[in-house]
Image (cartoon, rainbow, N blue to C red; front, top):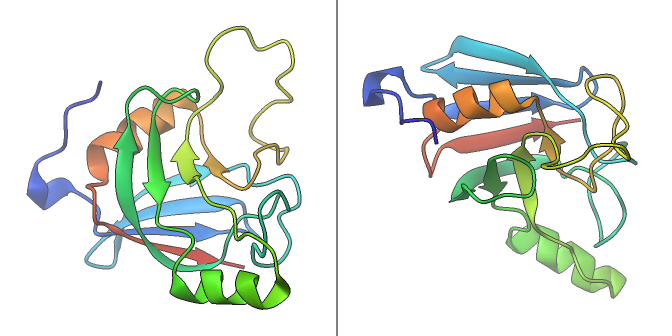
Length: 149
């Protein structure tokens, strides 16, 4: 597992630009790293319900880390927030959850459709395994995450 970067080298913001399929790690407004990403299989618009294949949009935080992820390593995004839950409730549907920034699937990948260039997750933000190792090191728990349309 990658060691954490020194505090003065860690990102304070993760920005995801869905339309550009891009993730940027920033510290005090300065870009530290840029990655291409794959999104949910139905990435347009904000996630509304469990199983819709959309990647959420909005302001969140990294609220957990999973070193035993099925996708190499993963950082959990704090979706759904109170607003997301209220919106889903108004529709009478569950909001979903388990949104992560993660690597590629572990094990044999015969079924795997590829990355980058094709959206394949169930709503998560996927990067390469090498990139998630670096992101794991640079992004502390509690870092802000903003996902733009």
